[in-house]
Image: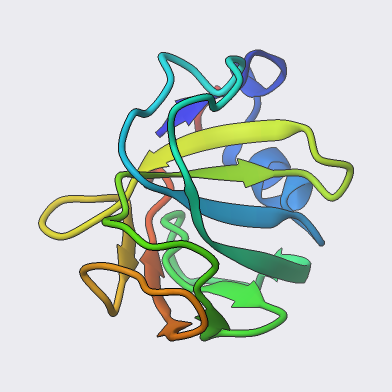
Length: 132
């Protein structure tokens, strides 16, 4: 996970709170160097909306099951997920995540997307420890 500048010194609870009502946008490859940079060469594959609150209480510090307004969502683009960006409800970037199989921070039930077919978020991994 790479945090946007306004969140670099934030604790995990603050980051979770910032996602209340925000979005998680899944993009194809060509991840920018940081969440502070505009996404230019990647297509939007799917968009998930976080509920408010975005995360329920958990027994550990690792957040793996966000609360979403809808899951699955229909894909909006064709491609292979490369990264995901989380935004606040007002559209400010919070963090970038790796997306895909293996050790990726964002896991989907599908390997690739096709418009109008469902995409399911199966896991979102935030750091297991406080970030401050």
